[in-house]
Image 1 (cartoon, rainbow, N blue to C red):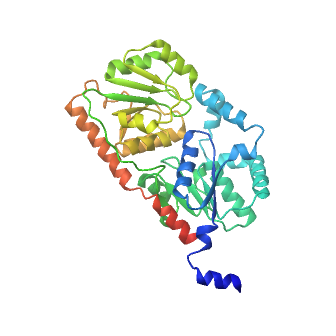
Image 2 (cartoon, rainbow, N blue to C red):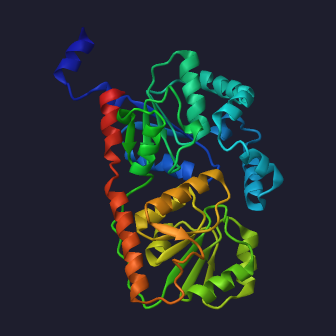
Length: 363
């Protein structure tokens, strides 16, 4: 009786505001999954939120080894990685091989208290959480944040209650795959900053391959880039120390070399174009900064799908395509501005505040 009278006296003390616990499940297989998790945590700062690095939690003794092997495979593009990619995120091929992983994940989940909301920013984790809800007969809302622009089958699961996507292009792909429109929110993967590009008489090129530094290793690639495009070039090698030292020692005129950086938005604000792989986070960061993309030949299946998004939405082109800037003149600047306008239109679609409204209504 006392509790009810207190609740009636102070109706603004709702359980949803003060006691809601939200858990965000991510990984470090590429920077985008953890970056998306951190963005969501910042968006939901008024709630109690916690980010879990799933491999680190489920396999604490070997997680660092798992990440190291993954990084080495990505850098070398080894035969083992090719075998792994042959699955191409096809759920029918992957699911029969997940019994051990599912068992370990369920054991870890059973040991801890359950939250009020699940959020997953990695496709495999989204699948495992959907299975966990199904097997344990839970009604806890599951939110899946897609870090790719074209979803593959592992992203789409029957117990997912809401999909957060980075563009209307992605939303249309989900709806075409059978996801109800009411379950899709176009939220993006980060803040939507105001962009001010400084004018320059020459082209400024930023070359970046994410945290692992997955960009071409050949010194001639950068010499050719300088010869063909001219202007000034910055190369961000991430944690790829071998590439960093190779390019530093090459001393190619007009090219500045950086290692791992924490001020990527500043480099993007400086650049007229960005050259790199068509990763999900890389593409979204380029859109945020309104920096047109010249992407290298896609290697991963999701990069091929992201490249489709880039071309279809006219925000970039393949490197060495007819879009090349052999001479940086008024016509090239006009073309760049058209690509930037397309990026602005994508940014206008984003409504990250809708997630908070959905949680308050549903959870």
